[in-house]
Image 1 (spheres, rainbow, N blue to C red):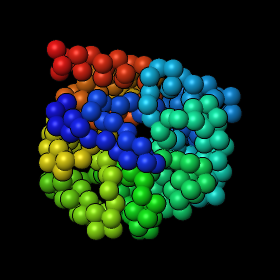
Image 2 (image 1 turned 30 degrees about the horizontal axis):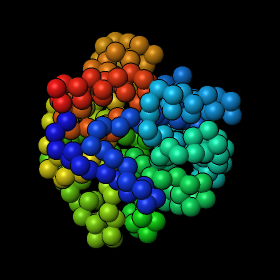
Image 3 (image 1 turned 135 degrees about the vertical axis):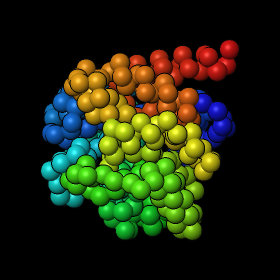
Image 4 (image 1 turned 45 degrees about the horizontal axis):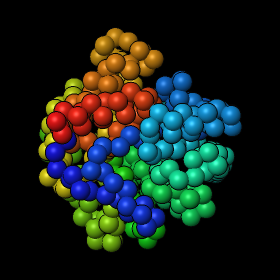
Length: 282
């Protein structure tokens, strides 16, 4: 948890402090996310989930309306927007002040979510690859952008992920895209290594082992390992049994520079951050 102690994001004109790592709660307004308990199918379920994230200490909510699990069914931009409108309306009613990121790879969906629904941050799993208008769109809007590493699409990314040199390719991927974003005037960029996206179990652990190398970019890191297959498949378990493994990997991620933890289980992640901070500051 070293470096970037004074980093903050400009969220609609106010500074969002990352001197201590923050916890982003996952809100899936989809019917088919990989972790069944995270699927919010009714307005009441969304309302309860938003309240839970806030009550358990989350400072950010990531709203996703397109399931990006491996092999997920493609949904139209219109359906994604309709789901986001329903979900974001409730988020703003229940938690009007919380910072909200919209999890989408479509530029028009991102624009609608920011300008119409009041989303604060764009979280793009594709790093601008699935919609070439994304970089220009976020730069024009001036909102923080979460740049994730992925190859392929959610439908194809896990078919046969291959790298000649994983670490080198990830570093070049980020370097090239950061420069493109900077050239467009984008100021706030958050990097996400993309655990579970176009990576084998071994790829994921190799990347986590060397995650601190990403600090060379001097940008905050978001890590999302919550209940993913790199945990439950390796342990011969299920997503429902992967909380303990999630906490272990979140701890390691914090040690290796994570400033934002994207999680299903907010209370446990907040406790992990508090304990890690106690060790660092004692």
